[in-house]
Length: 399
Image (cartoon, rainbow, N blue to C red):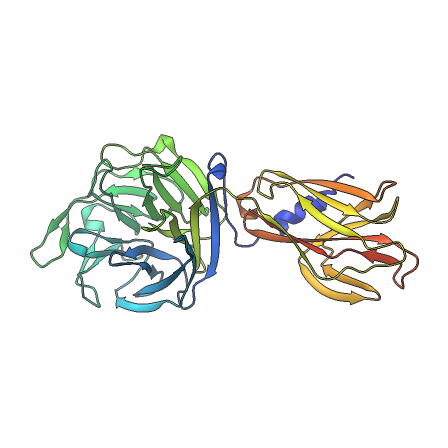
């Protein structure tokens, strides 16, 4: 059998908010989308609470609060879920930057006015706000981070302008009140994509150890850079690690597992996790048999973007029918359980033993990652009221 163009195109058409890791990083990492966090709203600056790794703080844009999200972990320590976000502090405005700095002061970016806020330990509201334009940060700021210990430039403070896609080194000086006065920003380094998040990857992370990840809000990418002696990105080394998520923002390393936590544009918790993965094949619904038997449908191969999978079918000897795909349904037409939307179909002709197969290349498009497509097969059988017999459904999750 040959793939009908509409069947391959269905995979792209069915992509919603999704994300996947691109080669060569896909052999080592996967993206997990844990869904939308209640009461969060959207993406924002991200930081784990230093005193409790099971709490992650988020400064969702365009709100004026910092919220805490309780995390659920499995027995291996990996994040598997979360509770509702609750307010823990108020600020004048928010965006993609949230970082604990010296003496536990919490720094956050404020998009629009181009400002930097600071909250001292124990405070429930902003203790200091500075305009960043006068110190040389162009446009309006997007995100911020401190270079971690063990990296070149450790301890230096970095901010990135979203509107100018420019990366700055920003010196800080204690002001005598427990907060810090920003000095004049260093020369800007033009990057790409309107960054709204940044993460320095742990030195022991496979393939990405010691690199800087920038969450590019505009195209929905995660890009990796080598860094120089000051902890700044070396522009010529940019590589796209993953993509396919609207409004990537925030970014923080999970202190328990080394996973990286981001938030998507609608408040989804997105995790870049060490460990390559293929998708899954799951049966659902009920088949519709007849005098010529009960058709079956199955999947084989690594269901991951850029790979080719095989859909296997069985039915009557020399049977003629269709493989159909679309979104999930559960309808009954005459004797047939219709379990998908028939958005795309392809003719299926079985051999003398009642066997058939279909090779289906999955386009190398990150928007296909973490998406489901639903398949079903039906063959002619004059013994039934509809003249057809059909298989149960096949749910293919693409990674």
